[in-house]
Image (cartoon, rainbow, N blue to C red; front, top):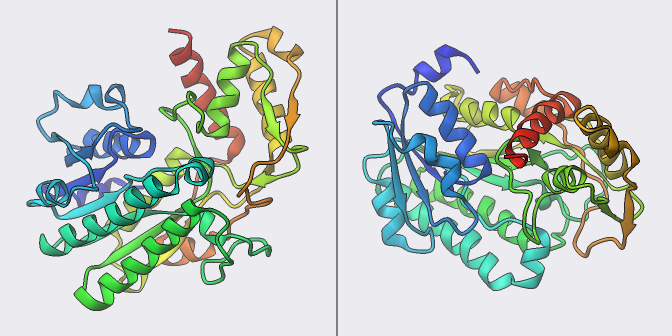
Length: 333
């Protein structure tokens, strides 16, 4: 992203839902660092106050503690807002399988509330977090935006429904939207704790604690791991694009390379061993595959490059080195 891009947002009011979460707090940080006015809406069900604590004393940051399942909270948050970065959601395929009702309430009903509030507030553009899970059982690689399969989990269904609702709100109410299908995002502030922790922070924490990381399956499943700064770039590009043809569609947000889970664990082990030699001796273990998991995920980012000028700068190796340094300092405190 460039100074010129961010300068376009000066004197604008941007709402970041889920702003205390992993991706949301990183978005808040870059925007606040460029003196852009931010409203953060979060109910702290998965977001953390510690993620936004450095922002609380900034004059151009406002926190609203509220829930997207409450329409009044959404309307309050959208008051006098120009753009929305909608990151609030209940993630995790396993969590959605265990509790599909709550996942649906947050990801579908909450999303619809936000669309209604944005429509009523005459929001200029609504950027939302979509998901690579939408590709479902479609096996062809790389994943191309126009071709999806059958969803494999309640979570995947909710994220696909988001795309359908966004399309309807554009065609019916002229609300401009852009959906960003995130592919396995990782980086600083991603929570390593809990039953539904993402694989990278979880493995990092296990290695640091001298515990063996456990891979679901034989390690051959692959993902397009995407460093957080690439995702921030894509959100800023979506906010600031002047290309009308780039609006009201969805994009893959990824680096465009696949890494197996075994390769990932090996990279983490190697990089963390630079901080602690004994990590070299930790064994990587395996268990059964998880229900609802897609075997392989690799994104085509051609559409994003052509329409949104997206050029990710961090591959998995460079991103992991930065993330590991952050986790080492954070987890050792």
